[in-house]
Length: 463
Image (cartoon, rainbow, N blue to C red; front, side):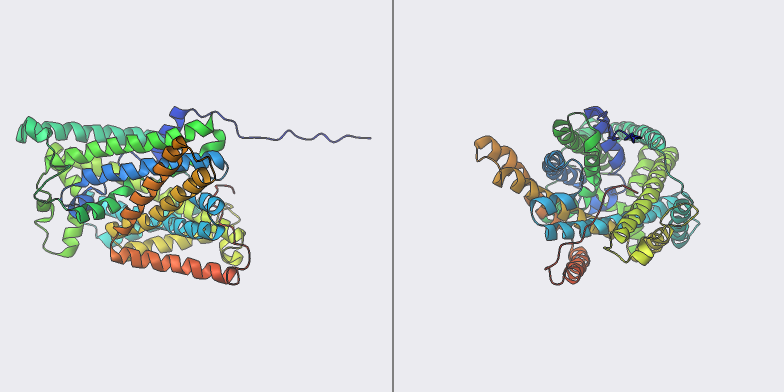
């Protein structure tokens, strides 16, 4: 009698240290995340962009603690959809996932817009519309041909980005000392300027500046490969947000100190389109002021390359998410669950996301797209904080320590995230609300009025 030999089960190895995970989180966010937002955030907050980044950091650190604790409870899940669905209610989890789905689709839109802005800054004689078509089509062609950006390329890109940012910061410090003296370098005006301070402006600016931190939660997907995940995932999420906040705050502080008259950035704009362009490229104008044409071009190129990398991988991520939802029957299988024979990739979904990215880039500007992305992200953050509160406080021991750690932190995170979310403009709330209402309607249809099991939204990275 022959005995079949069973292959040993292959498991993920826990090889990642706390430092590895922090670097991974920073790579996800990117060292220049705050710079494309600077002009709009500074304008909306009336010259207090650095304050908005610091307030957003407080919300993100509380939320990072909740993500880390939920990742230790559900180490194979790694998404707000699963955390909310498991700890609160499967229907609420579906809505959180539906809002995340919108964010996946918006990332390529945002990157097409900013890639076009940066390219037009470098080559202004080519029309904006041509750049939009070029990048939407370029991302689509790259992904149709199965091209992937290697992790080593991301590391090189991070090093180059950091080098250019250090150049910008050094040039800004030299410029400030030359023009304004030491008092210009050590000023509280970027944090608080009594002549223009407004809590409503701070709230609206924070709702946009919070985009700086979007993506930190991606490190929770590595929970199964981290040494001591219960400790290190939480610490990595917190340190990633803290480092990003301090690093981004320093960049924005120097930018504001270099050009303290925030309203004059758009003073030469005679049309709304020119004003939007001036805000889109405000950080490049400051780079040109403090470091000349060379720094202006270098920073524009770095922002362009970073946006291309994010846009291409974002489009593939959205296409794969659509494929997973089609495969699981959440979306029509006949269209979304098809793979092409040549590259074994979801080519129809790639084309669909490419067309959506081009349409979105034509209809929306950078600020509108960023705020709409924050609509879904902050709903998910609120949900994760509430899920952590219920999982660890209401179901845990009622002690003073547990009150401080399991109630106060997630409740603070949920409240700050709710304030930021409600500070989004009415237009964003209406568009995002329409998307959420469509998700609720779809869920009601699929579950026969919420009587059947909730369909699965799979946000994992499996094939």
